[in-house]
Length: 290
Image (cartoon, rainbow, N blue to C red):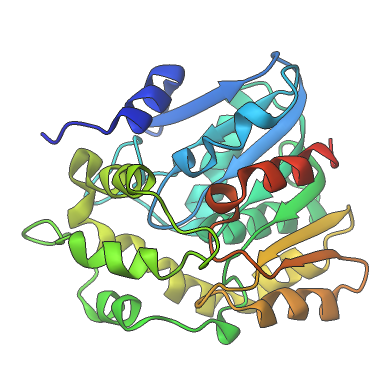
């Protein structure tokens, strides 16, 4: 078993595990227990630890819940698990219920953006178990028709939808991930070690070809999740790193085009990872929505 980097081990020690449909789900909570707070949805291929630099910068009293999606980070990674984004949205509802969140600011990134779009759609349909009073969206390719997939992503999608016989060599991931950060805010070695370790955790390097099927699911449900983002009736703020090579700025501008009331902020000096690259700025954006 690989030893966890210090940052990821510390994150684990601050959290707890809940049970959901037979799987252990890692949940990190901060602030004072309350029915209203912030719910954070992380991205592929990493974990809730992406937000470890942001949460301490939020007000001490603010209730903040972050968790690892099934198949990600410190949560269980069952080989035959249901990694559908619909199932991940069910999980988000279960986490909110376990943590006593009844109203929240929903913050989402990457694959979490699409899980959030499903939650937003459910709220508009009157069947969400909690209330999203403000949604904050960061870089992600829910509008997948505009995304610029990398050769690596395309190669993973070409593999069979089953666990690999051997773990995926993650050093190849390192170069691709480095390229998704901005020139002004490159990823540190310590942070990269945490990202890669979160993938390896519990044999997760064998599951990457299964997890990345979310891209195909986005294509199949493009209309629903576009509506989830753009027909949301509560406030929506979009904070987008302009140097993202995959979730390109055209996606953010399309959201604004389809939903003119969207509060859009494009950050020229940021890449795909606002929470890691500019945690102070990201925390300020969340604070202004509390």
